[in-house]
Length: 124
Image 1: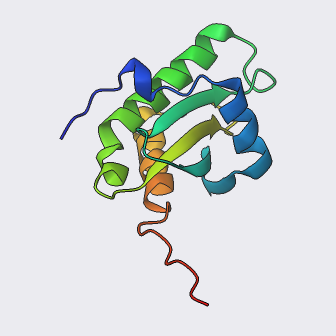
Image 2: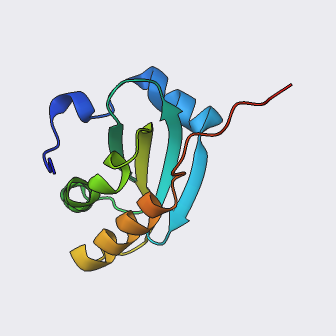
């Protein structure tokens, strides 16, 4: 399995991020909240965010984002097994810095809650 996280898989588009907040579905496993939307034929794209309100120091916010990115990179085969692709945004909702083990379990938990199969088309 490919466990890299190349540039084309990173969520950077403001339009896509706005769509996630407006139309996205939410899955939570403390201390991580996941906003997701199904995607077309492109690769799954993921982004990571930590609230400045909870962590004033940029160093701390960046550390948490690094931990979430690493946990996602190691666990992304959970969603690559299926033919579905997603736009994902991981939000850290904890008030304290969690250990990597805790973040890894939370990221795996939210990825397992994503839908596994394509919905069947409605028949008339």
